[in-house]
Amino acid sequence: MSAALRLPTVGSLRDFAAIRARPLRFIVDTWRAHGDLVWVRFGGRRVLLANHPRHVQHVLVRDANRYSKATRGQALLVHILGRGLLTSSGDFWKRQRRIAQPAFRRAVIAGFAETMRTATLDLVADLRANPGPINLNEVMSRLTLRIAGETLFSQDISARGDTVGENLSHLVEDFTRLGTHPLPGWERFPTPKNLAFNRALQELDRVVFEIIRQRRSEAPVADLLGLFMAAVDDDDGSGMTDQQLRDEVLTMLLAGHETTASAMTWTLMLLSQHPAIARRLYTEVSALPPERAWEAPYVKQVVEESMRLYPPAWIISRRAEQDTELDGALIPTGTSVYLTTYAAHRHPDFWDNPEGFDPDRFAPDRPRPAPGAYLPFGGGGRKCIGNHFAMMEARIILSILVRHFSVALGAGQIVRPQASVTLRPAGGLWAEMRVR
Image 1 (tube, rainbow, N blue to C red):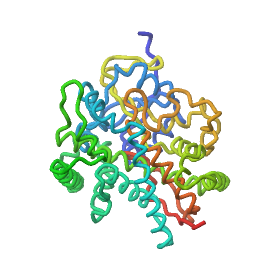
Image 2 (cartoon, one colour; image 1 turned 60 degrees about the vertical axis):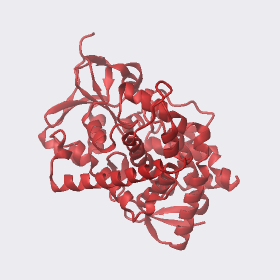
Image 3 (cartoon, rainbow, N blue to C red; image 1 turned 120 degrees about the vertical axis):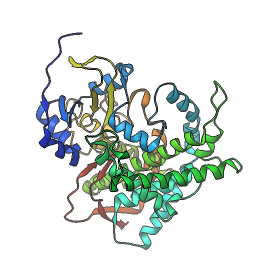
């Protein structure tokens, strides 16, 4: 191993509160002030921020066998989601991925398009009947939760008195507080906030297990839960237990609906700020039959560029399981390495005018981004299994909403990304959907 490169170290006890309160701002300020690789004192430990696309490629692909997902944030996700595809590892993860893969074939996913269209058209009718300002993030969360429920369970769980949505939102909003606490496992301490957090999780468990038990006694249904229940491991013929089903279902509910809701919220905001792009998108969508409008290439380009600027998976964490090297810097065993997708998506070495909103970056005749420079669904062998599902859902929702409405943001809002499980607009995002 070569001589270790000395890296800047930032952070202090005074900075710790700032890191917890606004982690994204701290990361971006640190990157711009100190460069692509920076040690950060975080509570009583040091972690490494890695911001360059080659760091992403190194950790997730080239040296992926030297790193694990055993980080603080991962431990909190395991507490919430159990051992689903997002959180499991090793042979168990490979088995679960093998069993679940058939449910995410493109032909299967295509069968959910009409469910997505119907849910979005119902939202269009509701917005027309009830004009006025709306909280975009809240409305998009409700829509994607309905789609998640109908594709997973063949039922609209968003209609359950909003308890499912409220409990999911509670988990998301509290994630940063718990994940950045200096004491490991703080979520298990019986403080009032933690008790409320765990009650929300227990209520979600109750709903999901109730649905699973009911479905065990019924004829098979061709939704995602039905496909999970019918799938077996080719090696030993076993299927998923109720607990494994719960873990995969809750993973899809939390990660699936939350990431798409976030992506759609930011996309609509960006269109409101760039009327020329919004007009071009409307023109291309309107030129196609409604049921095929989502296939317009420019719809995909707009979604991809929006997820470049506001990637739902804004950071990826890994733990070094052996002494290794990253760009000449020695990374001791046990180090937590944070790959900042948000920074990689803005890195000036790879993106012209990186802060600009330019969907033509993703035009079919343009080269695809360099490895590690664009990873809205993660990268390497752990890339999100539901990426095609999420992209189809986002494109269908966007094509329908743009066909019926233009978006005008409420005046005087200060829009600030809130970094939690995903990037949300802090305090919501208020807008008016103006009928075309």
